[in-house]
Image 1 (cartoon, rainbow, N blue to C red):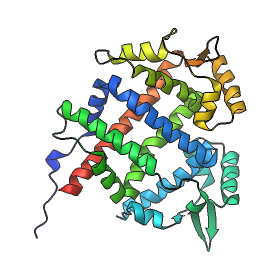
Image 2 (image 1 turned 180 degrees about the vertical axis):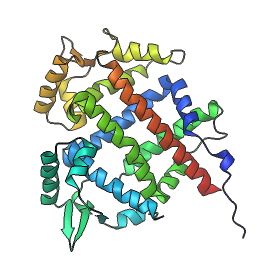
Image 3 (image 1 turned 135 degrees about the vertical axis):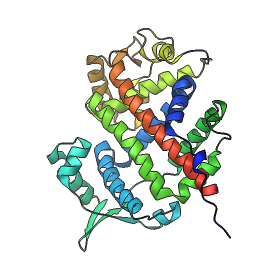
Image 4 (image 1 turned 90 degrees about the vertical axis):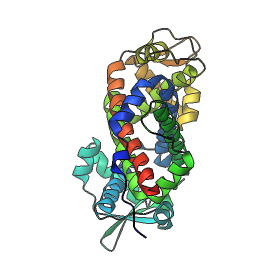
Length: 323
């Protein structure tokens, strides 16, 4: 049977998706922001240490890149049938520079990962042992990601960018069939976000805690019809205004949602208050301010650029697969 070549003319371009996201910012953000928070919650809960997760993430990205360069494609089951993943090497200086972690801290965290058995050295090989991780398979992340991409595809149809939407089932099938490649793309989208916000806040605990307050505003915005509101007014009304209509979030709720110990949450909240990232009301509810609006939105802009690239790659992969 003659194999049909992919119809290159039908490929979806990331710049068009970016335009759709910008135009429909008000409706997309209340869906996207909680999705990202759920992923950051999982990042913390894996090792109760963001930087340890980022080190593993960095090493896996290098392995996924090696797979991709050599045309190795592992589906979801093939990838998770193996409890151990071989990585090329561990270069402390390179990891330190890439992740903006001090060299000695990087070395210490790698040693700690070795002590708990996540990283192993076996017969001159360096192995990542997934048996030592809680919640190894990212089932929920895949579900949330594909539901979001399906929702975004519906918006793209309304805007005339694509002819028909992608179902979450179809996108899940594609993601699992090309898992090693898709997860490479996913990590390439998420890593710059973590690094960008770490630079803004100084550490990822502060970003995570501030993020809970931000998501609280995003969820409250969904209660109203904001369809006629432009991006600037939406951001000002729900996120960066000095006086907001909705209630903030308290320290105990932040601790429960993130998994960060309450004492750490309170300490970080006090720092965020001092730095004017947050305000507090008489009931000890925390809300975000507009003081660092530009820095936060700059990272968000870069993240949405990467989201557009990621979305286009997954949509095109689905189209090519079904061709």
